[in-house]
Image (cartoon, rainbow, N blue to C red; front, top):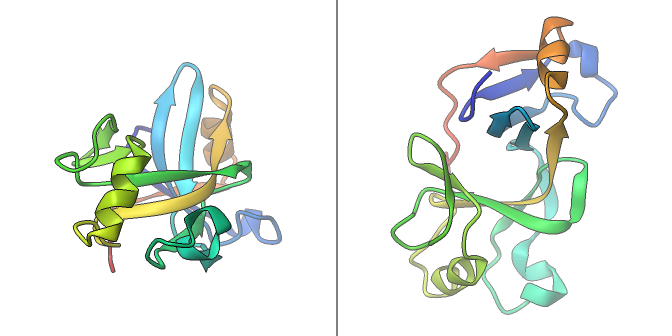
Length: 148
């Protein structure tokens, strides 16, 4: 397991919130693992949230069951968004969200550059490895994060 990896749930997780979930791993270290479900639309767009009603209708994704009161984002534009953390292969997590909003408004950022999530997935140290060993998750190769 490593940052920048994609995992896919197996049929062992059918019937759970992770059924048919593809997760992008953004952190993997001794404190645990963090990732975002990248293939489950939240059902609302950014501008449908009251606080962001004056922004473009960027899709929101159901990133996971942890901290569902906050927005998180992954992007590939460190030239436009400062303070992000490099995950792998020019993909960054987090950064200055005010810059994201400004660049969405002036259309220098699009769905090809940024993905917004409500919530995230989290595992304690070695917890995800145990779930992979029991067959709940498989590693994926060649997944494109920004395929719009």
